[in-house]
Length: 153
Image (cartoon, rainbow, N blue to C red; front, side, top):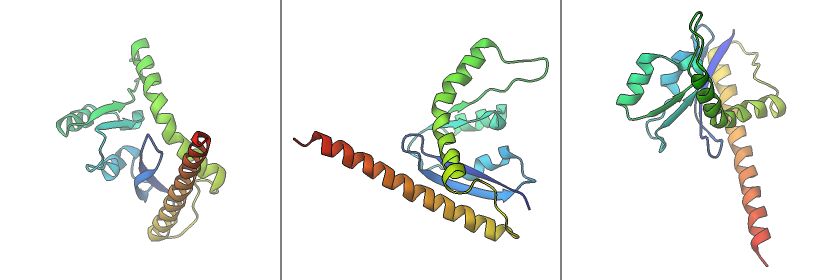
């Protein structure tokens, strides 16, 4: 069984705040509502062009979010240079999210899961999220210790 999962990642500290798993028959864009966290302190949304739609932009505006969703080009309607530049600027923040996936691939055996049953897949992904967040916490604590030890005379 193939699956799809969506995540909400804190752009500043790179913690995974919310994750959701579904079977692969669900399109990426359908995961958006499952990982949107109304308790999040930030009002900014960063996402790739799979999530771009006029309706979504309207709903995010009504909910008070500032959208940084990448714009998408279409056949016979390619992106303008201004849109391409705007996407490049958005990518500077989105790259922090991609580091999480890189960590999964390099340190946790990739994103491939071989289980029968969605419960097993959800459990596996939940443990990966927990493990990643604990590793990230330890990494941040080491950085704090390093900075503090340098500042002590």
